[in-house]
Image (cartoon, rainbow, N blue to C red; front, side, top):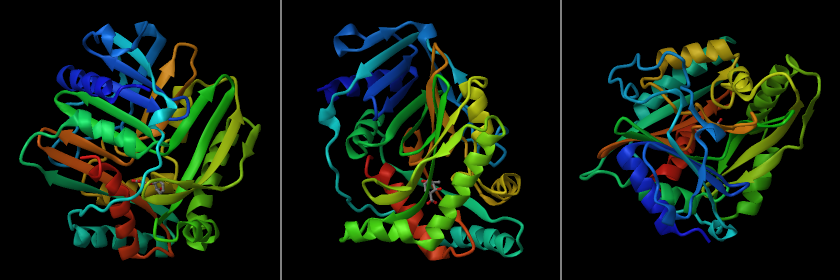
Length: 364
Ligand SMILES: C=C(O[C@H]1C=CC=C(C(=O)O)[C@@H]1O)C(=O)O
């Protein structure tokens, strides 16, 4: 089993010098891009710099229009590192986790204003779905320990893709359950992950209820349809899997796999075509994005944005940067969003974002 103390040491080096960490729970492989060399004793395998490329593509191409310029010290797009490594984790890290409860800041009034604007646009038939988000700022009395946060994300979220991108004194970290697109040869796989129920005492019943819930299935179907129609602009070889339940530490989601066959476009082109799906933006895409840009009070930066790696042969994976936070010294900006449709209730959606924020808050 891979030693947690090793991962702590690696992350401490990344925190000090800058770097990128990406963990894939399916093949249990972590990859690291680093500005400085990692000691061999840490059990990492050295990769040639050209073997792997790291990407953090912002949600909106023109970020940092809103106030503080929180994101402007971070390099975006393709990020290259002189030292690259891979780490194999063992199955031992895959333990079953149970929810715990953490309090989050009350910004309900601000949320209501955003919700009302979106709902009035939905009622006016301007948009069908918009993913609204919160940025919750939490101040600590000392600097946040990045290494232990990332280790906790790994421990608490065994099915999630855990990432940490450290640059210019800030770190963007998260444990996301959602793949935007994965390429393996001509197989292009995306997932619709949308529709959420928080866990409760009777989880078996809760899961079944989500699978049959009309509002959540509507939200989910919008995402499937958009991914499928986008893929069909490139190829008519597109197949849709069954909608399943995804069980995470604190909540359930609806999840559907969508696979296309294409030998023409590269992975970055696929990312640019698919991002943002209506699980992160809305429907219709342009109008939903305009509302988000105009009325959300914060810059999304890398929140809900494509984060990923590309291998030398062109294969790779991009996830969406949700269940995430930007760490700046003793300050943390945690992010969570949810899809709003005509049947949505303001308070319920706020509580849903609180549940989603727990991924980060429980790791601090
Ligand atoms: C935007 C987020 O979640 C998305 C992913 C899964 C389910 C979602 C939902 O049910 O609203 C969201 O679309 C977030 O966690 O910040």
